[in-house]
Image 1 (tube, chains in turn yellow, green):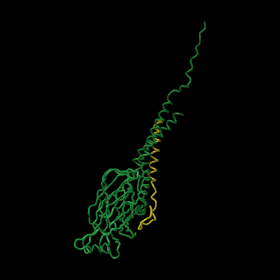
Image 2: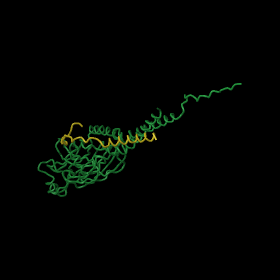
Image 3: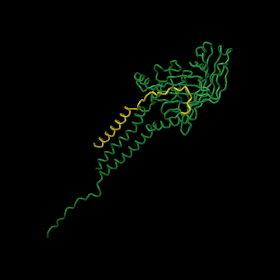
Image 4: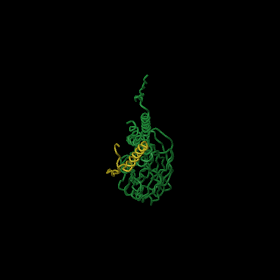
Length: 44
Length: 331
C-alpha cells in the first residue's frame, strides 16, 4: 500500500510539473523595432 | 530506515519514468513553436546576373545582384488573430528586396504570411497578402515544420501565388549538419509585375496597359535542418522575361532577370550557428531529456528494489535466538 502511495506521488509530481511548464509556455516577446531591410547589410 | 529510502526512490523512479513520455508527447508539441517576435534577415547574391535595362528594353549583364530577405514577426497582429483562431499564431511581415550592383532597388515584394506557430500550417486571416494582393496560402513558406519528414511538402510560391510540391531529394551533410535537401521547379508561368518598379513613371499598371506580360520560371533548392525545420541554405536558379505588348512588339521577349541566387557565405555561417543552437533545444525535449529521465527512472527503480529486498532479508549480524538453558536434573 505504501509503495502504491509513493508511486502515485511520483506520478502526480511529474504531471504537475509538465502541466505547469506547458501552461506557462515561452514568452511572446515584442515586435522588433528594426525595419524591413531596403539596403544590403555588410554583415549578419 | 531502508524501507523509507526505498519508498522515496520508488517515487523518484516513477517521477522520472513518467516525465519521459510526458516531455516527448505532451510538452514538446505545446512548447516547440516559432516565437511571434522573431526578426531575421538573409542576404543572397547572384554573381553574375542578367537584368533588363528599361531604357532600351534590352538585357544586360551585371556583375552582382543582391536579394535581401527580411522576416519580422508582428506580435500585436498575432495576438489579435489568436483570439479568433484559438491557436498560437505567427504573423510574419516579409520583404524581398532586390538590389542591383549600385545598391539601387530592382524590385521589392512585401508579404504578410500568417501561420500556426507549432505546425507551420497557413492560417487564413485578414491581411494575408503578397505585394498588396490578398492571397490564400495552402502550403508552407520559408520554414518547414519541426521534425521534418522525408517526404514532399506543399510549398507556396509568392510569384505565382500558388502552392506546388517541393520534393525531398535525399539527406546531405552541410557544414557538419545532417540536412534534408528539397527541390521545387516552377515551370514558365505568367505572373503579375511587382507593384514597385525601378524606373520612375513606369508602373505595373502602365506596363499591363501596354499589353506586356511578365513570365517566370525557377528551380528552388533548400537544405533543411530536419530537427527545427529551418533551412540552413537556399539557392534559386531564377529566370524572368517580359513578353510582347507595345514594349516588345512582334511577340518579342527580353530577359528581365536571370541568375543563380545563392546565400552569401557569411549569412550561411550565421544561419548554421543559429539553427545549431535551436536544434539543441528541440533535441533536449525530443531526445536528450526523455531518454535521460527514462534511464534515470530505471536506475532509481533498481536501487529502490534492491533496498527493499535488503530490508526484508534478515540481517546476518542479528543475534541468534538465545538457547534455553539446560537445567540438569539432580541425581
